[in-house]
Figure 1: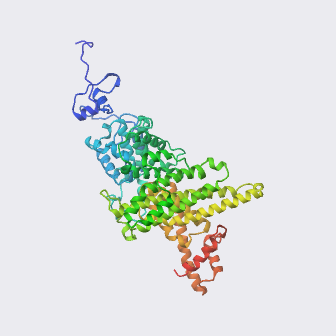
Figure 2: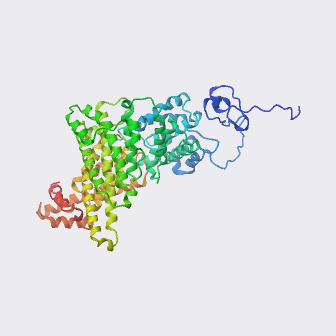
Figure 3: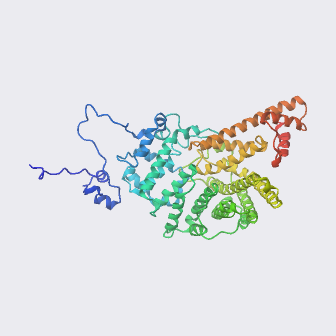
Length: 603
């Protein structure tokens, strides 16, 4: 038979048709088959070697990567394994995640607060992926991107050996023998770092390849939201995924068929978190006032009216549920006003707007009063019960729901407070570092004095808000979630700046200092961040010096025979431990000494 009349070999079936056991009509020039086009499934064929294996296999240039290549323990010995997984997202043959690992990561995602994102419920991704035996490669491109975003997010809390590698690990996210208050969980963050980075990079590559920021859909909106959360730890100069996420939501919300009473509170919470993430990094707040009206309903009454109405209610559940949407709405509004009038880059090119800051102080004070009142009404947990307040997959009790809502409100008030203080503090530092010629000008001196007064007022509000921060941290689950990270980071910096200025931890702040330190160590369960390790080391050093100072002072005071009035001995001990006496110029030195007299002598 001639070569011209020889029958050509039939090309192999694509993966999707092979999985469904149907006839595949392959198309020339690499075009997708008609079934895949109809189903919207990625059409590709994975080569399967046939026949007998060679007795003497040919040498290979690169080591093949097994599914266990996501193992951080193996990656510590050879970082190239993780890089192979990342590169394989763009180069064939594509090596997918094992189905068992995908199922585990989706189960972990149910413990994440991001699983309640309203758009995710509309995608039905979990049910679709389950029907495909958890094979991500059989999903359409947009759903495939979302699946990898969920896996990357879930890897931050996963306890699977393929994620955290060999070694000790919790048996579940409810394992109180490992995940308990005060435990240093940073070793898990170090072990999971290579796998989390690989999954994040793979999700980014697939998202850019699919162009999810251009096509409006539920899947793409959810993917952009999760990529926004994943990018927050990288301190990128821009927030492209947040811009795409809000843009998609604006377009989708027009056609949504749900009542504001059903989803308004959910969207108010997510818009608040998005606004707070922006101002904590001094970046523009993307959600607009019109976005709030579209997603959450009409503007609620002023904060002062809300505080008066809460005082008239007698049932804690009624108080909290009635305040959810109004409080979250006002926090988003205040975040936008704070950036536009006080902390934005454009505002630093002009003299400070004292009227705007005064109005913000008033609104913030009312907001803090509301949060403190709701905290007093909530049945807060004792230290013994903290370990039992953890993530649950079932329906929460009313007490747990109330605690979660009130703690979310505390995130809003405390984040606004610390953002304002950090900006005014930076302005003061810049004002005192100007040239001597400008400093001699009377107008400049008056402006600098006014700025210092505003900064001290903001510091007083931040000191008051620190109590709410401690309450919030005591209500967080273990291991901590993303919300805990965005709160504990700026407040740990605030405590350290104060300890550096005072040459030690003020006695009244020891408990708050220790609470924040413990939560920093717990946050390390999900993140291997150099900034995190540096903060822990600095806080531990200050705390150990403070405890050492307490013991030295007790010994010295007992030997000298004086108990309350020996300020000279206090200054001498302070100079021995910290190098110099406490700095009284900030307004805390004298009170610091008095507090040591009254508190530390009797310890």
